[in-house]
Length: 536
Picture 1 (tube, rainbow, N blue to C red):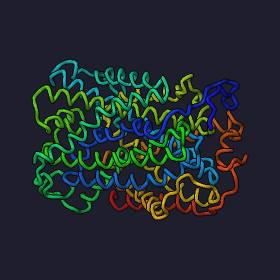
Picture 2 (picture 1 turned 45 degrees about the vertical axis):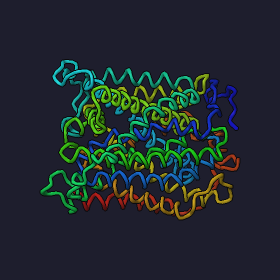
Picture 3 (picture 1 turned 90 degrees about the vertical axis):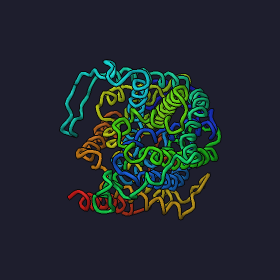
Picture 4 (picture 1 turned 180 degrees about the horizontal axis):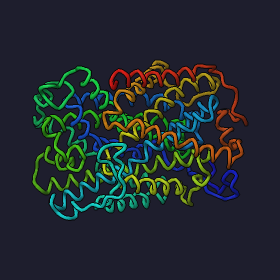
């Protein structure tokens, strides 16, 4: 069991408290309850790009995520003293085969999760501005251009406007909530979550009951926003794969429920319960909400500018359930709270990824610090600073797409980590063991995800893959600084003990031979073939 007493941060001479074992799976479920609200981030963008089959995109994506969750639940049980989520457990599998592949898992997971803060705060700020001020109001139209980034994507840049300032305030509120520790965060998330998940379910169910979902809204059922040209041809499949690519960022995200393993009172049972029950909730929301959303608004409705950029999604969803101005404003407020729920979920998970990455020797030492409440404040502050920069971006959907390049790489590495752990740590008793058929299905989905990366990423901008590759590559100098300069090429003792799973003091002998390298080559090949087929 992790001690709650002050302990030395490895190699620094500083004292720091550790994370505290104070929550159960229900608490983690509510901390992760912000994940269903992620559907609000790209529901408009996907519908306005893919067209009528967008509901199929969401259904397939959340089912993929649910299958993958079984692998993550198993490997999480191997490391009851680790925090930070599946990427940390996956890194422990890959480090035996390459020091440089392992930190990619942690880094890509953080880069996938942390932009939720900026995107969520930006969309919530848009909801607030749209609800309070007319379109021509100066507070909504003023803008100062700071940096031109059009070499990545046309029209992309850093700008200062009202969205930035309102979003920054919302981000600071989330920071303040989590400063008091995971138990306090869970209590706040429980209260807010119970009040805002209901509106999402209402939006998903009421139009179906009232008959406002028209089947004509799904005709013709083929990718494309032009009824005359929509078809399951090469262009149509490209759009469909692009939708599956971007939906993964939201629909797989309930794996964050296992970010709190070292804070569970009973990690052997709490870990798999947290992720599986979170997954069931997400299946309900990610199937029902997109179905009602498109069925009620129709193809023309989902192509409106306010729907595509996210600023008008709250008003559109409120209109779907009828009622007057009071009901509309109430639902808008609840949807803003839903976004705040997602923001808090993201900061809680991503800051713990930074914390554990530092404890394990992947990331800079300062990220190991936590406050007296057991909150990883250095990681939270890093999240905050990074996202204030992202909040300046003029195109949040492009930020999401680049972030998802990282997320797909993370999922590929960690789904393969499941069978690597089975080989290298076959003798270790698992608190919960995934059925082998589901573990194998997860491996298949790893390569499906790699295919989606090559086929679908560029749908969201011609510079998406390049920007994603640059973001991923930044971990190399970060890791070199920590491992070879700060730690002189030696991993922290705690990391080595965890790696052996059964308490050894070394990385241990790899047993999978060339298979992990074959898997990596297969992933690169899958993405490359997909890119060649659909983009050359």
